[in-house]
Length: 485
Image (cartoon, rainbow, N blue to C red; front, side, top):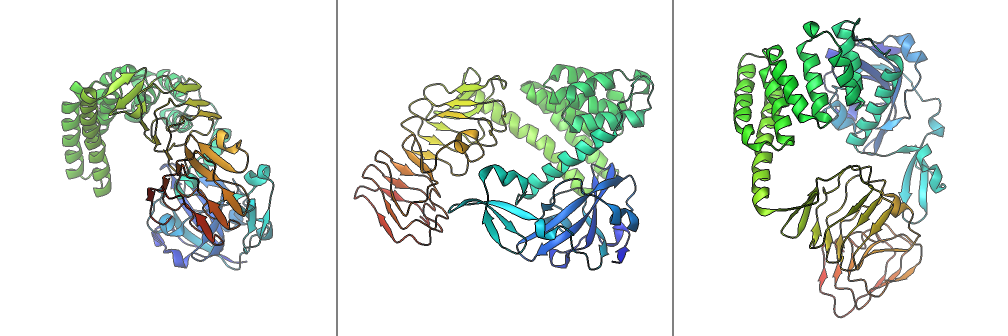
């Protein structure tokens, strides 16, 4: 199989319809290293499967022998070729740099996607469309169709793991600035902020550079040590003389997070002025200029919202409540149980977003609407109030609580959240007042549903893609049926 390679700059963009198996790609990870891979299978308008080589370089070139001997760094992954190679949604500047003629992955027939089928449960499907049921515990063994942001995160985790394994620990007292920065930056990407602070603080101060002091300030900010971040920035302000907009950004972030709103306006204005100067001097591209200005405008927005909130919101044990709605939780993020205070009728989706510590959520009586959850996968116990009438669809599936539910009707308060059984006729439990959006979605065994007299509302798409459903018995007292039900 012949391999043709060309310089990265030859094809800055490649449209999705031209991507084919055997294409060799590269991307520039965090402006440090070039990583390489290969397209291994393309099903037009459906998916594109790629593999990432267990190889990286400080230079943008790769040779034929390295490609032929390359092993995979991680499980193959699907990518959206339009956003990756043309619109560059995944960043890192992905480009096609070559092609391996006649390439067929040696394990192509052993590659499977895993997906959930409402009729039969977890299923694996090969690259040709043939599917078979698999045990629930096996789903993690196969490739998952994920969004670009999820794929980018998985790729980054694989890269960080490789870099950690291959980067020796450095001694700040004896190493040079370049080696220390690479090591500390890797620790920062791995979210090891305390270690970043330790190694950079131990570096001789007379050798400290702008990027090391910036990394140190970021580590303090990311650790919630805002006073230390400000002290660090004040001490090393002179190092930022060439890019003062960065200094104002780091300092403004510390002020915002530390709720020092009265000190923010001059920092925002000075930061915007420095952005203008850097752009006029050609130090920032048009896109970079827009991004940097956006940071300071976001600070202004957050400050205005926070001041408005102070006059209209209640602050109860870390809970921020406005007009009977829980806006967010600012309390101890290390607690395993969250008990929401009385008086709340609605819960915002972002209230507990990305909190991996919470294992138990308790909602008081009176809560009627929960706008959903984001990434709280370790929650294994949820106490819903009997007053609950609405819960945003798709917000519970990744929680341990949901995964432990028996097949059938999953009822939260007075809302039927999801039906996961396999019966042809379903009689919704009496007492249910609302059926949540997409509760029966893609259930192709379903033929008849009886809605109880207690039910007043059917939310959007309740029976979407239930292709064999022929009869729905509705009560006379139904009040609202949403679109596409």
